Image (cartoon, rainbow, N blue to C red):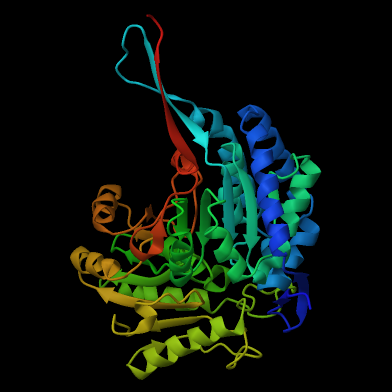
Length: 462
């Protein structure tokens, strides 16, 4: 009997899609096609590669009427937000735009008569992208486009929860006329993925997911010496200073905490507020949160859909219950249909009276819950922000840029924001520290992580 992957929709628990798992022979054949296609692709001028990427983007955007409700059915994001096309366009266009400059050879800084000396940035070969369900297009495009622009071939293994996204990418690349074998979408199980990683046939893997998943990737790839890009867990903090523009901070932090039902790698999971503005901030934050409408994501009135799976919602319920037992206070008493154990539908929650003995302030939530703590000083805020095994982003809310930078310099994080959060700028490198992982995506530095340096030392006069 053929093994299949079933996609269970969070909307109503139905099986929305089911696909057969690729055979081992099909996986091996895909890798061989990728290797063969990549050799010719590496000789293709960067400008020509870019034309294929932009054609793919146009084809993908052209499917938006089908893709937007598909996302809702697959992982629960409300249709009112229109998918992920804004970010996909921005990232694709920018990485295509900078490719020539980012990939050009680096000349030796000390010229020597009679010699030509430089370092080329050459393709890695075959890149495996293991993409997550929470932002299924954005997270995948972060590596797919720059890897292809850099001259590599790409194999995509998408999350079971967003099974159809890989097919949409394949359709878009096929419509763009990308040479066969350069991009391939494969449905694989965990054992097959581990076997492929350990085969020595993959030159780079990019994985976005859990810390446990990242460790499994490292273990599977051990001894192959492939390069790794791992974006793992997060527990992103915000610090609100006394001089913050309060209405702006509240509106943006509520959105940063609860957009996509809180299922964001760089979503706000904990907020530290200076005691001088704590009461005002909490009052405004609670009032803003109560404006959410939780329900069926296919309804245009819905602003928060279900979480992608019921077990994710149950984790939030457990964190909330533990915090309340230990003395925290919940502020949102929203009535939500089907909000019960075993259901993916969940009301947002704002907790005060929290501390770092509670899991909601220490362990990744990845859902619509946030704890707010009062602090007396920058020193206390910095210590609390750093009291975490994770480090993806941290946001600082103040009108004093010099102070924000000074605080940011001491926070263990990959990105420091001031007066914004939960955003990925493709011109800046996307990276993390500690258990958040290793590697770097986007920007010119992202290209450095998707190529290998090759030195040329040429004596031109003999």
